[in-house]
Length: 88
Image (cartoon, rainbow, N blue to C red):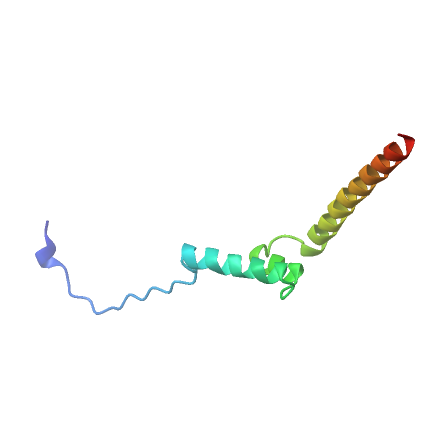
């Protein structure tokens, strides 16, 4: 293979791992979600950390809008049941 004629070089290889190991990242994400559910971390902070390329303000507005629709639908359902029970 001709390896006898290769010159000896003095160099150092350094590898910087800047990404967490997948298991560590999953554990960190789970911990962050727990902090959000316990209101120790804001949703906005969580979104900025784990979804930095998304617009957190518009995403939070969408969440609020969807939650309001769900709440309104639930209230409408209760009202309809109350009206039904009064008619019976």
